[in-house]
Image (cartoon, rainbow, N blue to C red):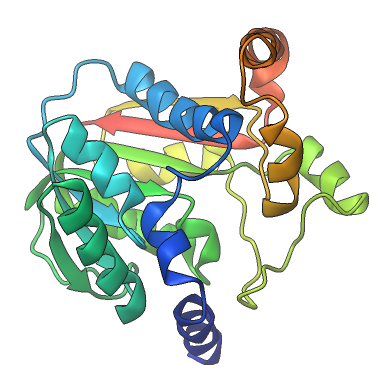
Length: 248
């Protein structure tokens, strides 16, 4: 409970305008990296059949905005009232509709199979019990599950060792990175039979934005895109970003 209170306090202290507008104001390469996570998850999932979705740990609504652009009606669940207030402003400003619910991801206040899709993007690793939240997502989703989280990887351990990543976030929570086998087993135990996973390299932190901004313009951006795609084609299976999707 103390850790949760620290996280709520931390997210209340963030710059509201920056949270509402992310990733629109990010450097172009960072926007590409974020978009690549969603696109890779969609490719793994194949044809999307859901018309509504629950965004678990949905924060200021970035994931919900992305789903709304696909024609999927999002509901945002988050523990932070400030994050939900920012999500409301985002929805009004960017022209999409969403439902907002304050709640605990490990005890979702919804009946079973009441959403077509349950999706989480960089949310479970904040939690003390991420697999409990995953169980809840598998319970409330009727058709599709989408998970995009930091992977437990050798690359990440190296990044932590050299100071490029951390095991404790500024909000005070331990970073609980996930592995594909554990996630897949947990989902399959909840009677989901069509489960797929993949990993990629995706790295951005606020301190990297000035570096990435140097690649905002063509032709440097085109070189960045090509290099990034080649990197993941050759070595992505060992990457630090995990995607797991499932269908009933």
